[in-house]
Image (cartoon, rainbow, N blue to C red; front, side, top):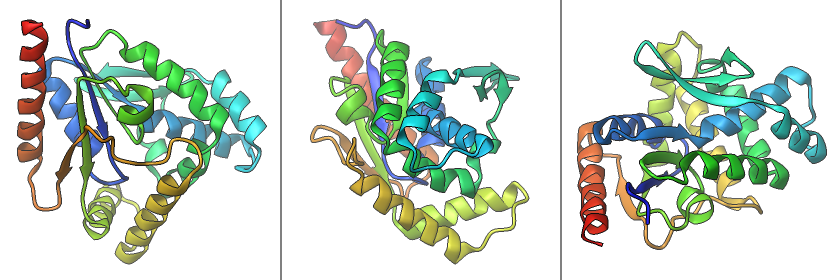
Length: 229
């Protein structure tokens, strides 16, 4: 039995997984792994190298060749691709849309899932993504499915991109979120679904603190159960 639990947080784009996961990991003193960022790194690399999104063989080989890791810089976790800080570059609308196509490629998913399992197998980790509780760690001690309405998620994404100085349109951003939802939910390999034993949290009308509080309480009960065992 693991000394500390694995926390799996799944949900659609824009539900707040990254922000919530980081804060929860900080409170718990756990490591934080943003699996979505890993797929975004593959998408960014594919864009830069001009790889056709339909070329599954090239994408699979690309996933094996890349070195992706997470480092803390000035107290903030950053994403590095082959030694380059790409934390901002992987969050553009272009990369976001391509990520859905990249993440549907079986070889890409197989390679990254294996890496994610190695990163989190010892526990004491918060992993976020779209298939953590169903595929990567179906035996995770604490599972959550974090969601919000498509309009609310689009609004959050719009504000995030605007704050970064990007010229974006609200309705277009909402439409892109809905398009990403459809792609993630209908893909053949590891579609976005809620694990049967995951705690559903709709963050539409909740503050960040309220969501983190709820999750922390659930994880605390898991910890006590492990200690008792």
